[in-house]
Length: 284
Image (cartoon, rainbow, N blue to C red; front, side):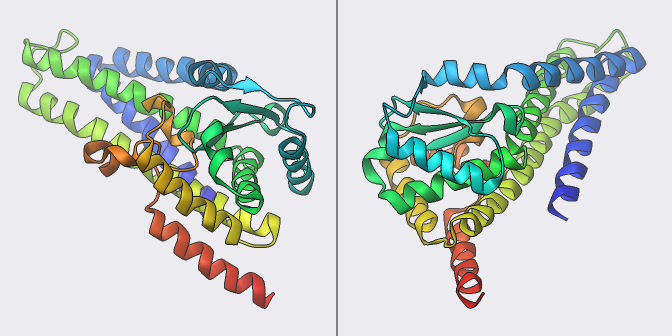
């Protein structure tokens, strides 16, 4: 049901982009919008990992540099039955972590130095298991595609907005400028809500998978609580368009609009679900 829900939301997001393209330039605009979606998704597929690693200044780590952390990633990857992901450390004091890569074969796990400074071993293990779950289920690719589609929708909506204000969109003066203006405001909001729905769904799933992978949700539960407090005290340097990749919202400490439209589930909901799952694991 979870995968079906994500598929439906991705279809709606693509349809929203095509609909905006039709509003912008009729049939030709619809074709252009669909082509834009294909091009952007192609770029996300091939280059999303390279882009985010460069933006965060993540540094690759080998077994000699971090033997315990490397061995932990290797052990959990074997349990998940995926190839060993490349391991990176981000020189960021804000405690966080993320995964990227277009498939398990090209998976990447990156942890901020701030996370390693405050978490104990079971908590780090829970975080790594969470990120490996994302790689195993190709959530990293799904969320890269979602982010690019949402970005394209926002771009076209801005073009429609300015066209409506200054008299005509796509050369069609018969279109209602008020309706176009309303569309240009509603469409990006709808895209954000869909992105939130997909991202939150995958975060819950990765939390549950991580708990089952290590045999307990206690480590991840403790990690989430510490990371939530840590990111509020020390907001991260993660770019906004990549914030959905992190295990906790890197802008939690900023409040306001960014917190309201967070792609992450409320922390209390994640902790409660892990507590419920812990009871199930104990009974099993």
